[in-house]
Image (cartoon, rainbow, N blue to C red; front, side):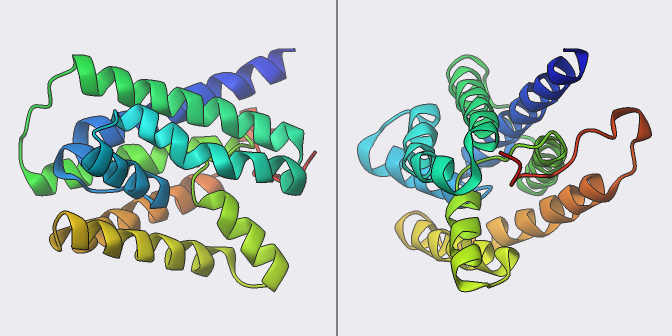
Amino acid sequence: MRKTLLTYCCLIIGASMQGMSMSLFLFPHSIPSGGAAGIAILMNHWFHLSLGFSLWIANIVFLFFAIRYFGFTWTFKTIISVATTSSTVNYLTLYVPHIHVHLLLDMLAGSVFFGIGVGILIRAGGSSGGMVIPALMIATYKNWSPGKVMMGINLFIFLLTALVIDYKIVIFAIICQFFSTNIIDYIYELKIHKISFLTANWRKR
């Protein structure tokens, strides 16, 4: 019971940090933290939907497929993560004013919080949802590298976002991806003996 409670606390903390990085630091500059965030920004731009709701729509279709491919446990944890992230984005976007400091500082802060948040999610056996799901599905079917597939999908969405909103977005998004993915890798490989049960065993059903 204590183990399960700690796992879900980590999921909520990680997802909240991810949502905070998006709403406070990245989204105000239209910088997507990943493919799903890029789709959310485009939906907000085209249809004026809230960013939190757009993030849900960008994730929900893939979650249905995730149950079949990755099992209920992994998918349920991912749903908790997506729900917490979307709620955090929606609340902070509506009720917390963004205090613009500097674009580069916002990018750095957003990358750090995003990397730590997603790293915690992976250690807790979940994921941030979004393009992680189709990337893993394609990689499994084609026997390709998941990282390369994910980067290809994200790059396409970044380019589309740049064409619609601003060409600089691609550069900013790639910089954020570089910093955040290195932080994610660091947390993933970090040895934490006291909570060693938090592993990235995403295929455990």
